[in-house]
Amino acid sequence: MQGNQALWEQGDFTRIAPSLRESGRALVESLGIVKGLDVLDLGCGDGTTAVPAAELGANVLGVDIARYLVEAGNARVKQRGLTNCRFEVGDASDLHGIKSQSFDLVISVFGAMFAPRPFDVAGEMVRVTRPGGRIVMGNWIPGDPTLVSELLRICSLYLPPPPDDSVSPMLWGVEAEVTERFRRAGVLDDRISCQRETYALIYPGTPQQYLQEFRFFYAPTMNAYRAAAATGKEVDLHHELEDLFLAHNLSESEDSTLIRAGFLKVVVEVC
Image 1 (cartoon, rainbow, N blue to C red):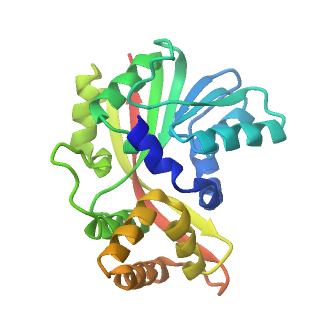
Image 2 (cartoon, one colour):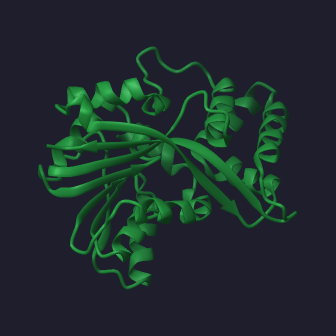
Image 3 (cartoon, rainbow, N blue to C red):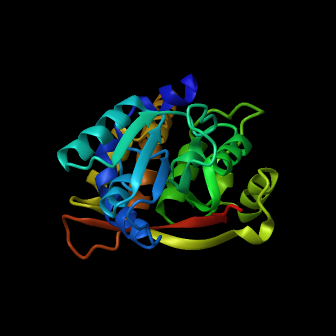
């Protein structure tokens, strides 16, 4: 936990999270959440999906490995007067403090995919879900031509090779890998469905300004810039990412950014 915690605590995802809010709310509203539903949000950040779920009447627990994001999430729900939502520090691959079969719905949107030990992550999500409940994940797709997957691919080219025993978080965006992970957790194949959907990133500034938020506050991009600087390639990385952000911007306004990014939506029905 400590290594992953250190990775995600070096940045400040609260600077980027607002650009994800609109699509986060839309995704939550598509899940048929009703008052009284018990919801767990893994890798919740400061509440992009946890807060709208609570506003729909669910009882929500948000879990994130970054302590500052847990503090920010608790501050957001307090500001909104939401007494049915709280945040705590935890590791998606080891939810030892959460009882089995505690939740009707487990959500993780671009969160648990970055936790270590993916088979443990799948097992823990199944364990804490009640029979008849659902798990819903949103995961970036390797090789997808849209912005976030391309951002992560480009950044990886400037980083040192990962350890031999490491597993890429992007494999959560491969249907066969997802199926195998939940199969090992005891879920039948016909209870696992995957489909490609699109997430909108909306930022009140230029694409170049939006890239700066990733450069200085998003952990994977920060690491890539640091590694590129050490090898004299920081300018190359920056030009490559700037071209990427400009190419994917769909906004017709000169001072705003709209980017649509493809992701894999995973739905698991727990029996």
